Length: 269
Image (tube, rainbow, N blue to C red; front, side):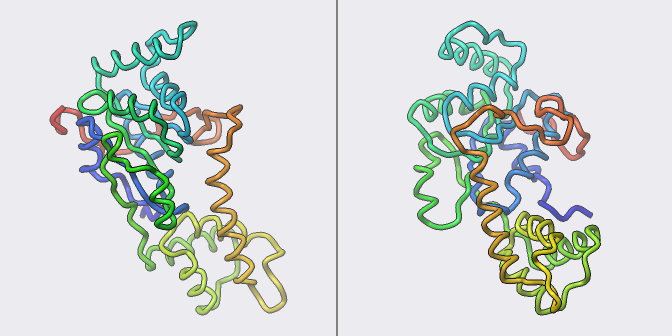
């Protein structure tokens, strides 16, 4: 049974295949990146032009995503402006989907390009980390580029508990006392990614003493690790821009079969 995170909904797929733009808001570790990666795999299997960008902080990130979605377009040895025009024309002929993770620093040029892609040109799903209200204000109104905001659903405590049990057993860790388990689930705040990182760190001996697990230290370090992991994607260095989803597989080559994707005809495209 799949626990982390929920599968992309049929309605969400329909909206993107119709060319709608959506912004997925949620805290770090809530499963947004994994959800986008799953949707990318589904689109690849269905043969729909698509691309997944693990970090989207400038106009060129969106241009590179379009290049991966439409590899047949000649975009080398020309200006980026001309390349974007060619890519837009290709998307206008055959609608595709862009999945833009860690979306931030929205410039006017990015807004202009996204507006051009709106409609039946390309569906766009952006994922934005929102921990507090001040984080939400920093995304500068998704409606500027024609996107409707949706919230990433938090995972119920019962499912988080099952995920924690599975990871603890898989890592060969001793069972947790009920009070320690409750403290971890409370600190997770509905975020399955937090639980995953917490279980990984719990494998290190420094979080254990003769009395058992040092929950307070583990929770603090897990929170820091989840936040730093998200920041790693939006640092200025771009030497490794196109990260693989799975070991040994590039983003444009990943074709793991995932069922349940509706067809463009069903979506009314």
